[in-house]
Image 1 (cartoon, helix red, strand yellow):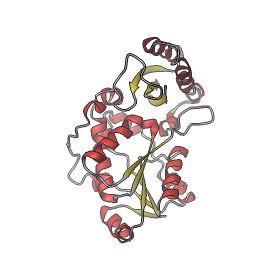
Image 2: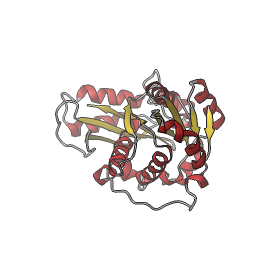
Image 3: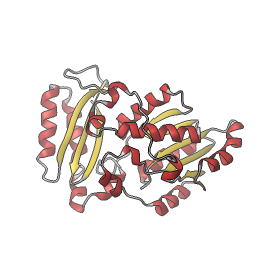
Image 4: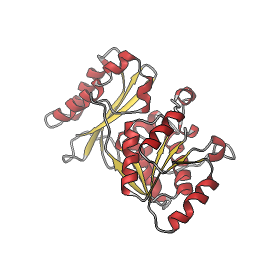
Length: 280
C-alpha cells in the first residue's frame, strides 16, 4: 500500500491510472478503523480496479472541542489493517494540507435534511462534513464512494452534496455492521467502559422491539416505550428516538407504507454518544 500525504502526491500518483479508465473506489474515514470500515474498504476493492482510503480527523465537523480531542487516533494499527486487506492507497493529509488558509466558512444548503436529529443537536456538524467531503472528492475524484447506513443522515447529506455540485462518485450505501451482540460497530465504542460496553447492546434490542411493535402500536406510544426502556438503564440517557420518513428524515405522526419509515436513536453513555437506526 502506498501512503499519499499531499494533493500533489495524489494527483501525480493517480491521474495517469484514472485517465486509462481505471475505476477507483474510495472510503473516507477518520481513522480508528474497525471491521465496519474494513467491510466498506473490501467492497471498494472488490468493485473497482483501484482502492483508496483516507484518514483525516476533520476539525470542522466537531462542534465540541473535547469530542475532537478525545477522538481515538490509532494510525499505526490502521495502516496495518489496510495493508492486511490489500488496500492500494491511503490518503493521510495534515490539517494544514486540507485547510491551508485555516478553517473555511462555506455554507451549504441541505434544506430540511440538516434541521433534524444530528443537525439539530450538533449545529454546524453537517456543514463541516460537507466541506471535507467536497474537498476529498475533488482531490481524489473517485468512481465510487462507500458510506455506511449507520450514519444514515450523513449518507443523505452526502448524496445531496454530490448532486448539487455534480461531484464525480457514485455514492454506495452499505449495511450497518454489528458486533455479535447487536451493537452497531463504531470507533466510539473504544471509549466505553467495561460496564458500559456490557450494557450497550440494549440499544439495538430496543430498536428490534420497536420494529416488531411498529405493526400494532401508534407512533407516539412506541416512542415513549423506547424512551422508557433506554432511560431505565442506569448507564444510559436517551438523546432522542425519532421516527421519520426515510427519504427526507422529517418526523411523522402516522405510519406510512411499509419500509417508508425508520427509527433513529441517539444514546449517551457517559460522554460517549452512540447512534443507530432501523427500518420500521
